[in-house]
Amino acid sequence: MASTPASCTNPECSFDQNGACAEQEDPESCRYRGRRPLIIDDGGDGDGDGDEDYVARLEVPGRADTAEDDGPIGSQIELASGERLDFDQCALVLAEAPGRIVSFVAPKDAGKTSLIAGLYELFLENRQGSLLFRGSRTVLGFERLCHLSRAASGRIQADMERTRRAEGLGYFHLDLVAPAGRVGLLLGDRPGEQFVSAAQSLDQVKSLGEIAAATTLVYLIDGRVLGNPKTKGVPASVATSILDAIVEARLAPSRPALAVVLTKADLLEGDARDAHIARFEAVVAFLSERYAEHFSTVKGFQTAASPDPSTEACPRGVGLAALLEDLLLDPRTVYAPRRTPSPPSRYFERLGTLKVDAV
Image 1: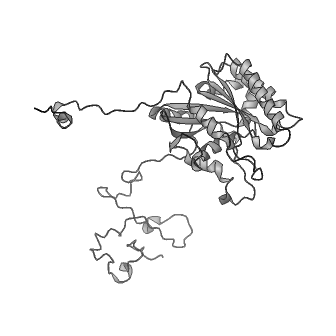
Image 2: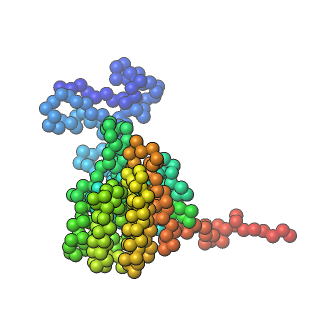
């Protein structure tokens, strides 16, 4: 049978050996006695029987120590998980401050995850331009995305965790301060396979309900596909099929902005780079003309969120700061007004603030 657990949690105290308190206080009132749970492994079979004999309960002033109480201890609060938000949780964000909802639409492996992670890393590396980071409800989710691209992951080659099909829709959150005021940014994250399959069926595309709430629709064009002579015509055709399905299903009634983003621009280096960029600009112009009645604006952006380290000519995160500012600096955005303190309702409380005219 295990010995009685130590009653003092101060590692420098020898009370359990000789009864002398290191704090020179009454042992019963010493702050180190029974202030945290202490579990001792008695080498049993691990079935949990008798654990109550080896656990010192956390003492909270004013709380009765009852074995039947399995609820929260004291005034504990439940913290957010830090992972992606679901659609209902976004309402809490929008209730705190004016917000912008961004829906990323992209085929599989177009670089959506790297782009979302790159927007977060702008603030880690102080490359965010005129915007300030105020907070985030999904820091753990962001860090999970970035982990495989860091040396701490132990990988030889940088990678990025993809959104699995089973995860469905989720939102990453950034609480930012723009020159005009505070704004919350919600970045929609859905597996790319679902967009391609939805474009083939009107019933399936109607399941992409988050697009109806978006203030900006971001469509990604894979630079690797655009730069391949065998697949250079694919981006325009795929974009047309997906956007046509969205328009036909009437998922964008409020005419959101459309940002056409070229990803992996670092792969377009070489003699043919100018031709590839001209092809991308032609796609943007084509989409702008085709969907002029359905989107308020159509703009093109060239980005490289996570370029190959050997590509010295293309810095990490190029183009992301301009994209981020465009997502926020929309004239339709209503920013949080600056609050001015209102005078107290009772005259007596205003005495200290009244100006007395000199006699």
